[in-house]
Image (cartoon, rainbow, N blue to C red; front, side, top):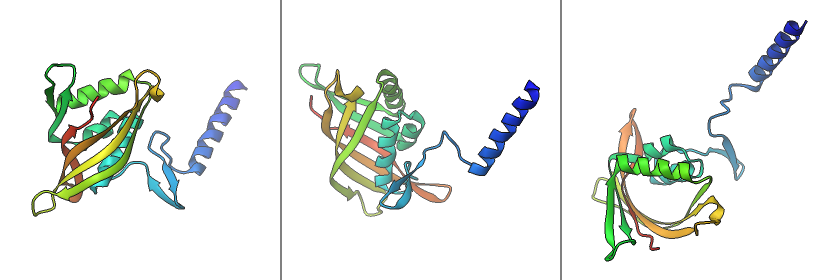
Length: 179
């Protein structure tokens, strides 16, 4: 009798899921935005789409989405204010991904907001490289132990093609924040 009840329950749940449609509970959901539906993730077919995915990767601590933002030639540049005199910190894609994964693991919550685009311009004449300076706000664990970082960052993005579709990736990120 228990077996029949268990099988009936399983069949009921299975039919309910079929009627619900093909929904992946692990995929980013659709959100309502001004009456229209839009994806939380972007196709990265525009530079702004890169920043949508950048926020998503930090806010949901998604290292796979983050790694797709960075071109193979990626370079991160920042300042080390713990040294006298202040020195440059520079590393490539692999170190950046490893560092970011460590950041994702260390903090319970991250909240990255892009505040404003200060400027953007194409580099060269072919419109395949773009320089963008953005203002951001990054909060760790609700700002309880580490103060929120407000700063500027300078990005260079490169337009590429994948499956005959254009997409953008970051080739350079210069953190202009001061601590």
